[in-house]
Length: 103
Image (cartoon, rainbow, N blue to C red; front, side, top):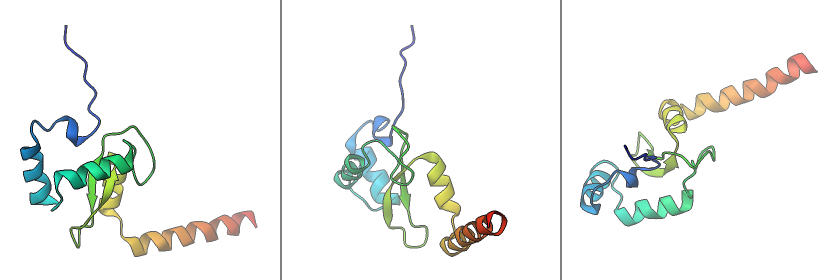
């Protein structure tokens, strides 16, 4: 009988702290203890939308490389393509559009 296993975060697939430290330091310049602090803050929930418990990815600013938090796959994809200025304009449009048709 095959054992069922639910993958919830990157910490679940890391065989040793050394492996994670190499990965986190190489790509995101954070230590294992910093990652664990993020996990505790997130409480197994996306720090952007609050969904969870969820598989969580390290979210980082693509320009500066700085880590912002842990997010679900959907938010990670969305944030990776997000242009903040354009998003602000789109939100303003949606607020205006609601009033145009609904008075």
